[in-house]
Image 1 (cartoon, one colour):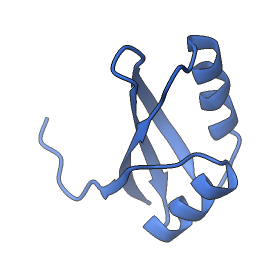
Image 2 (cartoon, helix red, strand yellow):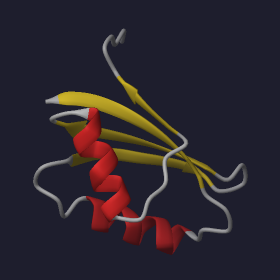
Image 3 (spheres, helix red, strand yellow):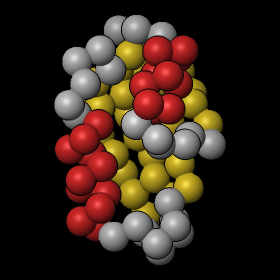
Length: 79
C-alpha cells in the first residue's frame, strides 16, 4: 500500500478529542492510520496513512468528517 501524509487545521481541539479521533481512524481496515502528530498551540495536525490510493484516502476522510488541507503521497523517504 502507498503511504500518504495529510495536513489538517485543528482549532480548539483537546488532547482527549485528538485521542478519540486517532482511535476512530484506526477502526478502518482499508485505510491504516500509522500515526497522528499534532501541535495544539499552532492548531495543526499531520497524519500518516497507508491506503490503496489517494482517492480511497480522500473518501475515507470525508466519511470520517475529517477535512485535509493537503494530501501528499510519500514517494521518497530518506532516514
